[in-house]
Length: 298
Length: 162
Image (cartoon, rainbow over all chains, first blue to last red; front, side, top):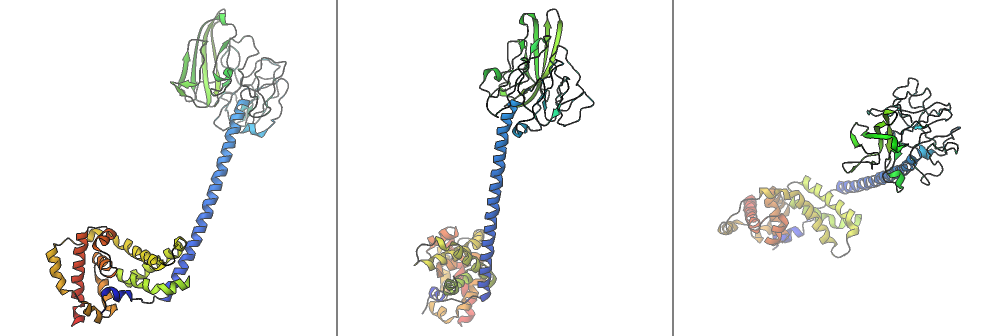
């Protein structure tokens, strides 16, 4: 007598041969699928890693080169770009350098796609280097009330005929004969990069305004945006407004000795172009304005 | 691999058949079971328990198909009612006489919940508490379902027992 359990213990019906075939086929198919997924995952990982490395390198270069792009002036000519790495500026970055008024100077080199707001014959995006003795300055793309920054008391200078909107910025060693030109080290990216405040050659300038600063830089001189009067005693009153590209007022002061640390209400402001407007009452000159852009570098 | 299959497939197929409602279901679970077996063979260490291991894979495969059935479990009955139902259940003698395929047919006709519990308790020998754990229901539910299953089977097999 078998219990039900025993009955079924001996219940061993032979499955169809087709089932074995089907099992085999499925096993092979799954193995192939697994391999494919593995391969494509591996490929995806490799690609992602490559992108990450490229971005990482790009950032490195960016940080490095951004120091290099602050102001570039030379006396006699512009050295060709010594390295491609300096060039990799993102499109969003607007770097503006301040032109120099001296007619014997050569150029300011400006980074990237700055659209000159005023001059008609500026080709957009061309990497022209001005070899003439024109002043060059370029307006930024921002909505901010910017115009050319010329180191003169007069606010809006028209853009000279030969603009230098360049995708590449060449760093140029300062000429010793132009001690008033600001300096950019062009040698080794990341080493000896000094961001120095721009100084105008003209003695008519009331204040010296840096065209870039880097709040994260260990170098104190570079860390803050500081306006320096050419003749402190002549400044009877002073007021500065700094706006972001979007038109937001990020800094305001009536004290020329006060510096901007690149924050707004305690928040570090992003890298980019900012516009400053300075109103002063200068003795024997009256009310003076000075406007320009300053680049915040991080 | 084919050797393994040839040796154990029939028994495992039998398990699939009795847990399933139809031969089609049985075939599906059977294939799923073997795929799992072959893909996980490297995880098995103890040679002796190969069959037990495979069996549990197959039963689990069937279970996962049947487990959603939990909500369809029959309502509980009290013990008296359950006991009274036992009278009609075929004895071992009866089962002895019956062809296994006929019994199989009757089992397959059971509703999923009844079939599950019947298999676990009556054929695979799980205790009520073990079956309750496996099915995810209470012991009393298991008991009630088992009683119902037996009742149903008796009805179906009656004609063969005359």
